[in-house]
Image (cartoon, rainbow, N blue to C red):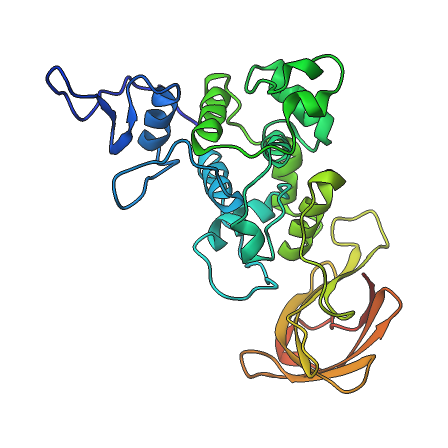
Length: 340
């Protein structure tokens, strides 16, 4: 977020003795609240908003989707051209923020599941997500150290100081809305509002990686102890990839990505992208399961003819295109064997 000046903000309410001065728009954030300045700053720059009753609920535990909104707004992340294909397909108010964060490969848990998005976010996840955007791809310990070194955050368990970094930081603890806003306020004060080269490169996406794959890579970047993903309900479900670089040029590659979700006993949703340097295409639709290892799709979700045959292998997916000419450029197709 590029800000020339962090203006001095006057409270909207000036009152007589005996009343509490409130932060602009939030009746539950008094002037003596430790996060008062941070919350006023965040509201001024449209990073946060409150609830319909005029409160901010600064001491409420923050969910991952609330954190996702704050982080995407703080960095003014650009929206990608495509959208995530979720395991829980129902539209959610946080979809636009997760789409933006996925484009930059931010480590988060809830990309594909609305239930996980609504769960409390752990301090360790917050540390890795912020550090990824501020300082580049980092492990859990590196992320914590970055926040501590620049006094963006402090430890919670003093008895572990200089003994156990993760316990000192409290990686498994929840955070409040005020704590996260305060952390972003300190990021701004220390001029950490520029996006890291790692995150920017993922967004520019010169390797033509699908949005779902960038989201999955973000999930996998989280420390194993911080990962919280919905277990696959079917052997079909998952993300599959094929990539082959056959030359030194920027277009000398072949890539296939497939994402299968919402599998039932009869069918599953499939989303595929294909890119062969200069030729590309994508298709999504519903495939009918014909046996324990085979399935077929006859048309895309927009009604175009697209016949694809699928065979589930050991940690792989074989795709054979019969006819999908309306769904991709000349010179490429959706065929290939992709690894899970």
